[in-house]
Length: 385
Image (cartoon, rainbow, N blue to C red; front, side, top):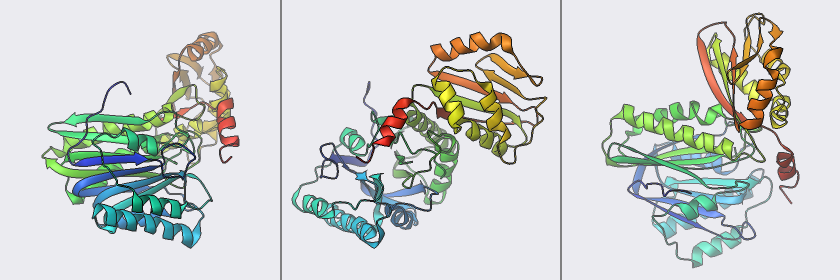
């Protein structure tokens, strides 16, 4: 971290090692001084973690006071025992923090299948004093799995502060990955509008990224407002959108094994949905991603990804494909004179901008992905061991 991010009023943090992982921090808390207006969006993966249905139920009334994260084991496919273990953790915390269990949002991230070492966790929570801190760094480290760094951003909106903390670098194709994001503000946000605000922000940020096309069993993005400052709603929405985009980009930048980030804009489509689906088809294509890793301007793979996009309407005679400012395909033929410039462009930049102009309508959408490297395979081939 080059700079210390501002902390919204009314929140404290905690992060430590309880024994889920061998050495690294694996247990994190965010605790508000008072009950907050809150909202969350969750994974659409139906094989979800045991914490997901509990979280949905607890945030249903638009209120939360705490977040607990266990990292190292995802608590997925663990049955009744896994569900009971989540409740045991929450019961201990509710007693320890003197808050209602129903106002705690649980999250678990890590390997799918194993049970949490619940006795170890319960003993820790029984014996240890939970010394909450103003500093978020221990919490931010405690929620990581294969991440290379903590990812934190903050900004001011009037008198209020918005702080966002995210983890995630693989199994990322949010569709609201092992992606967890917690956004905190000390602005006042009405309970009736907090979910629509978060959903709008997530749809133009977290739901526009993909690392490997795999929608995690554990995705959660939560937004808590402690309610200390009056802020105009439009300005607050703009700040929430900005923080969400910064966090989403930080996840892609920290993607497992990635060396390049690609920004894909599909323009002049018949609808935003078609533009988004086409962009996702491109950034999720292993052939496009491996070509990018090899500095290969293989535009044919982009054409392939467009052509397989379900429901996408276009006339290939009108389609144009650009790498940066250089066209590589137009008028239904390759612009061969630009191949060397494009190769140099890819080699010399770690952010690659692709533009696909369909000339089919007026709607555009940008999505963000990354390349696929040898290191991604290595990281994920031995992750559970």
